Length: 202
Image 1: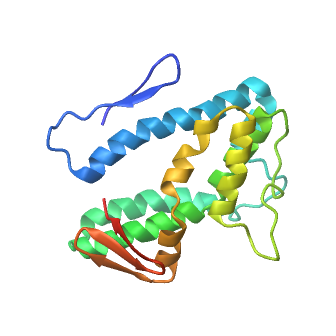
Image 2: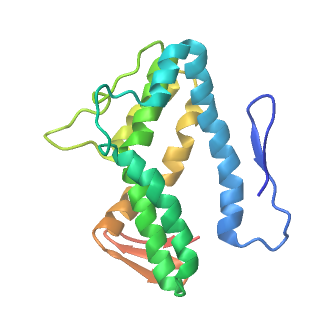
Image 3: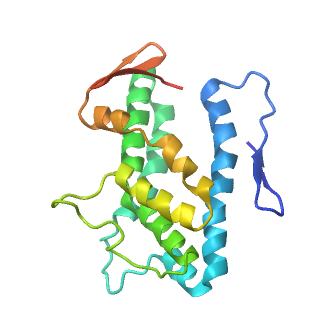
C-alpha cells in the first residue's frame, strides 16, 4: 500500500485492487488519517521548542541500565507476533492472536507518555518522565483516563484531531473482555459478555 505525504503534512494511501478485503480497506482508510493527525502534534512540539521536542523523542530517562525498557520489548515483539500469524493455519486462532495484540498495544504506556510530552511542549511546557499520569488511589491510570488527558492538551494546543486515532481505537469494553477472557468469536463478530455487545470483527 503506497503512502504519500504532501508538503502540508497530509498523508494519503492508495489501494490498486478493486476487491480489497474489508480489514485492509479499513486500514488503508485509517492509516493516512491517523498519520496526518499525529504528525500535527509532532510538528507543533518541534515548532514550540526543538530541544524539548528532541528529548521527548529520545525518551530520556536518566541513568537506566540495559534491560529495563518495557517499550523496547513491545516494539520488538509485535512485528514478530504479526508475522507469526502466517504460520497459524487456523482462522479462529489468528483472531484470538489479533485481539491479544490489540490488548497489549492499547495498554503500552510509552505511546501515551510520548504524546502527552509532545503536547506539553507544544503548549509551552517541558518534557517530564514518570509524572504525566500519576497513580490514582494506588492504581495506574487506564488508557481511557490517559486519552482524556491527551485530549485536553490537544485542545489547548489547537490540535483537536490529534487525539482522534486514540479515541477511535480505544474500546474499554473490548479491552476488558480480552483480558478477562469474556468474549466469544462467533462468525464475523466479537461478542462480549459484560456489557452484552456485538462488535464486527473487521
